[in-house]
Length: 74
Image 1 (cartoon, rainbow, N blue to C red):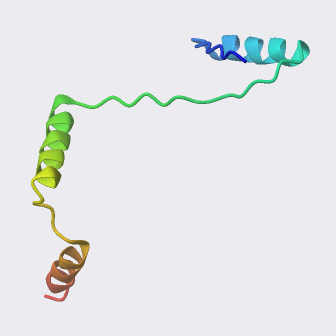
Image 2 (spheres, rainbow, N blue to C red):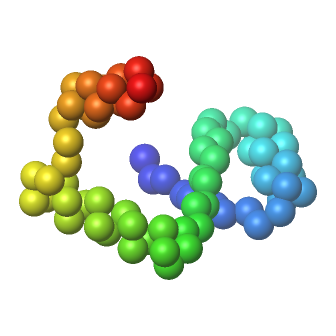
Image 3 (cartoon, helix red, strand yellow):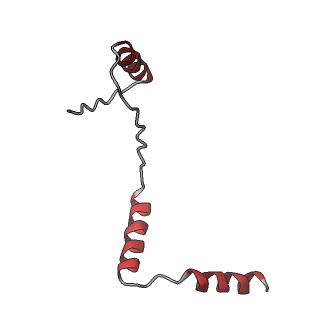
């Protein structure tokens, strides 16, 4: 079996293709893609976080919770 991937660009195209496939009795699945845009500053922050994780510089969650409790109790 082969797979054909189609990328409609408008809701109208999507609706048309769905209706056509249904009428022709083709089995299909609809998968939504979410496009995420990231600013240069956000991308830089992500890379810094990845580098810190790779260098094992991240704090343990129990340490973070303990520090947060100490800050909130003041």
